[in-house]
Image 1 (cartoon, rainbow, N blue to C red):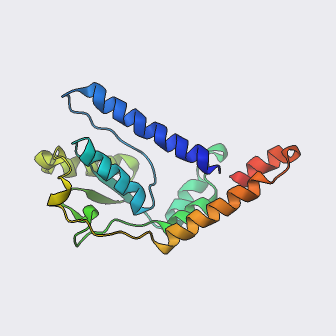
Image 2: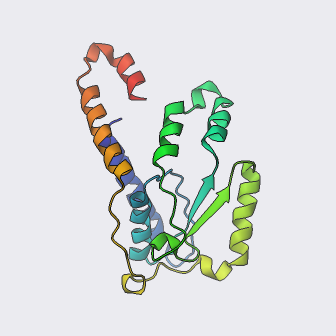
Length: 190
């Protein structure tokens, strides 16, 4: 894992989304960003982006127990499997959206949590479409200006701060691996 490469990739995605919106003119578009965004702060960046671009913002969460995720992962083709520790880490640090209070994620129609433990992908998609067919007008509502939605200060969670610190340590350690061990280094980085 190289944090610089990761940040560059995220910046490229942001620029691509901006370009897509600029080229759309007045035509409505639905952009789907498929990313774990396990920290609330990662999602909030896109919420603010929606406000800046005067567009709607919605987030969908597929909720399934860690054991179900590990079992599904084990049934993937070997080259498509995610390391078990990545799934376990995600289960430990994922910050689910706040469903009540003054949080931006608790605003009506911002967060949708779907039960993915038993549902097939096609059923999850049907549930998502059904949800928005019932609320068609709300789907296109722009993120309100900042003064309309009181923002509560959001401190980074302990898990987030710890994760960032550990990633820096691992990155530094991997940078010290001799070049002769390139293959082993790439295995360690995964």
